[in-house]
Image 1: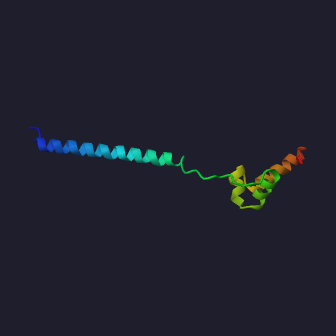
Image 2: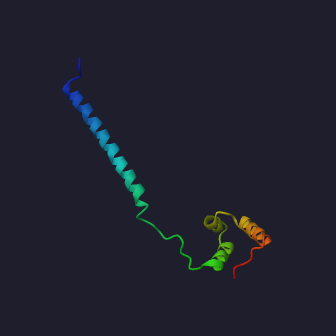
Image 3: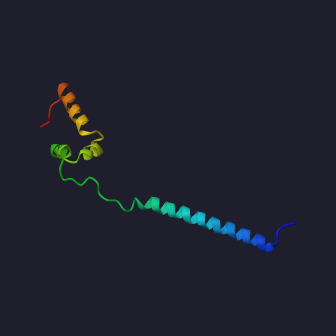
Length: 92
């Protein structure tokens, strides 16, 4: 025997409410994902260029050189040594 109409109506209403919650969640996640594009903060703000910028990286926080160049200071120093051994010199 099928359930009474009131029970069916209650089940349908629960499904509609659950669907509305899913839609709200999807919209919220989309809004949060998109919001990162609207709240940009400048990252590269140093007025220094070239050798001055590299010197700032060398003398600055140890993780900054890794963030900017992708290597730690000791690796960067070894790279400079190898480049000089290969005949490369300062450009200025």
